[in-house]
Image 1 (spheres, rainbow, N blue to C red):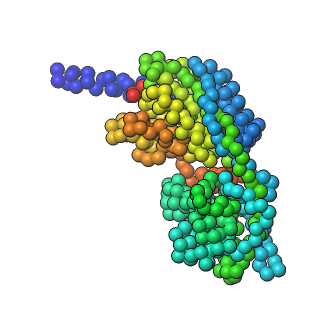
Image 2 (cartoon, rainbow, N blue to C red):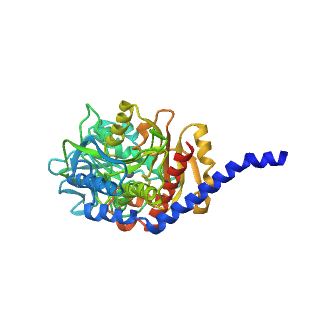
Image 3 (cartoon, rainbow, N blue to C red):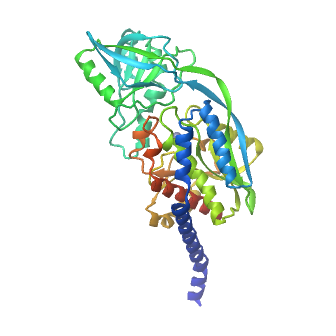
Length: 450
Ligand SMILES: [Zn+2]
């Protein structure tokens, strides 16, 4: 009798686990045989291309996203107006290192949001590795110079996102900090592990009450050359010119598709990535991959006839790169509308082989998700850890919603990130599809068990 009772209590869990593993197998088979996300990525990258917020290409990406999501026939597809910044790179961005009578061109590109140089500026260069060194040098050694930030990504950190985070202040705050000591411009070592001649752009910020000075990224090869040259001759000069420009904000939009929940239509689960990209390359890993994977989640649910219990929203966020206004705007509308969100999953770490998921939630939520890890082991997806979810969904954080991020293998991510390298060809079809299948499986589990 005791044995029977014991078996009876185990049975429901055993059955549920089997159903889950079977459904996950169905999802992986569907995506790996019928998935269209790689084809979607080709269109997004090759027919539309780079799509910085505020650009006509971003307008086209919004139209494209609306059409693709509509073709999958969810219950609704709608646009959510978002006012976004508008900045253009212009046609001139060059830097020339002058040594005596010789000169050498350096590979640079303007940081997003930088002011132009209003013609050529020429100045001595001073190299630092930490922002705090500027205070030690003082105005007398910085004024009138170009500050060259040359702190490399820490190669020892296995989590490359953490290495990026550890070098990020040079790009985001470097110009504002240098301007406080009278610098006339900044060059920032590209935030990449790769030794290449590609400058990697990214967002930067000015500070109110401090001069806005031109800021550019310099490739790692050129940064090494410049650093070595400065050791020989600390009086080196650089002539630099940028004609980038800031324009008035423009109205663009988040694109949202919704499958109404069959049991809890007033409770929402979100899956998404960001539709905008930087203006160089094609935004393939960052974040075309997350966009087409999120769309693939909806396609997979539709093809397999999975009707979610909660309302499922696929959100293609605008303006992650230089403002996060899409993510902030979405969360504001959720709050204003009193919509209850129970979970959100973002993919914005590249289209590489999935390794697991990160979670931002309470202990019970983390334990629930960890209990599913064995379901993903057959797919070599086994990292379930607490940690950062995603920039776009982070504004939803309210103490109850479970936020999650797809965690792909990220060792090569920063080779491509924000550079000309980030093109369709750099994304592997099978790896992209495995990520999409992992996301669809996780959404399936969240919907079923929350
Ligand atoms: Zn991104």
